[in-house]
Image 1 (cartoon, rainbow, N blue to C red):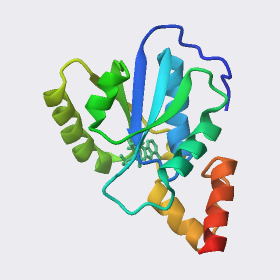
Image 2: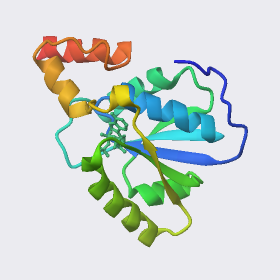
Image 3: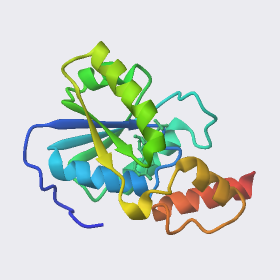
Image 4: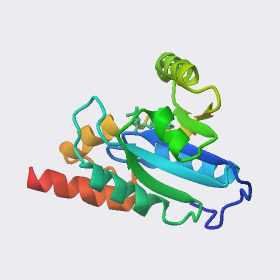
Length: 170
Ligand code: ADP
């Protein structure tokens, strides 16, 4: 990936929330593009999503940090509150979400309207997935890795190593 130095020189802050269990190339692409638009991007790892997790919060943060280390205006943090509340405490102007196919839309639309209901001042911003990442989801990647299928083309190298370790230890 390119852009070691951020292009965006503005004071705008974006929060990119999710489970990131684990982070994959589709997420990294969204982060890179957000980092070109915003002065600062906070990748916010949700501490307790309503799903079964493979990686602990600390592991998920570590993997995000390794994946974004090349961009000086991107940081990782965990949070356990409502996303809009966390966005407010971090001074975020926008909440970024990535959109894959139409299947993401219904849920994201509802979530964005609920977030606006809770806080009018934080804008929801959607970045369309890149074609080459449209089929990626953390769930599918975990399933592939669990069966020993190669995932090196789908995730950052640290994540591929971490998935391999999980499989060996299970
Ligand atoms: P959540 O658990 O909230 O669905 P994820 O960690 O799976 O969060 O994803 C975080 C965000 O990244 C969501 O907005 C999701 O739609 C987006 N995302 C997930 N996979 C992709 C992808 N392949 N391309 C673009 N965006 C994606």
